[in-house]
Image (cartoon, one colour):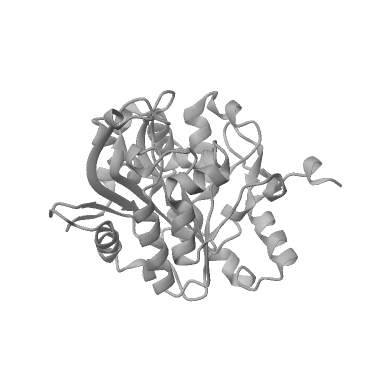
Length: 316
């Protein structure tokens, strides 16, 4: 039977991918922890936390800020283990230079890759289903240079890597998923913070629109529920929101330096709702006033940032 007529669940897909690839990394008990033990996936095994980090010292480096952000919760080795295959999902969907803040800052991406490598990751994949042409996006956003410098595998999106999967969402049932995003042991969500014409903001949860294929324009109908349906499916190990430079107008693509504000911040959490709730405040939004954040809490995907027990502030 064609897979188009037999959509499968995320876990079934992982098992099938393991069988096809012969990989041992996802076999057996590893399947139970292939995405971190967040409350939504494996019970209350890891306390929820949020880290709000800011570069305050003139001449601070993004590399140091990223490292200090993870150090606040035990270092990246608390999430990434030796031999792990790691998928990192930045937002590199637009052919825009980093200073325009339409895409994840390449220095943040590079710093996270280097930390994963120090933790002993076996393989690191950079994955995003771009809006503009992929190779052009890779070149202009700086992601291509980061992949070359670090040895990370920059995956070119193509139809053969899309697989119909059952999302079991409130709005989305079956949808094509970009399989490299979910066939890794660990998944790091690495979005850029910016405004968006339809959803008010695009932060962590909305970044998953770049992890699927199909008629993506249709995802913008009832966009807030769509965002939450995708976030319930992907469940990253952690979300690190890049707010080094944020787009404050004409999002999501921008195109002018007048649309950009320098914030020098990173927000890290294992709770996707909390991460977005904290980042929303950068733009002076109350989390209750952003539809997908409010729905994320309603459907028990996470808590607001003020409800998280472990709060850390970091500065360099």
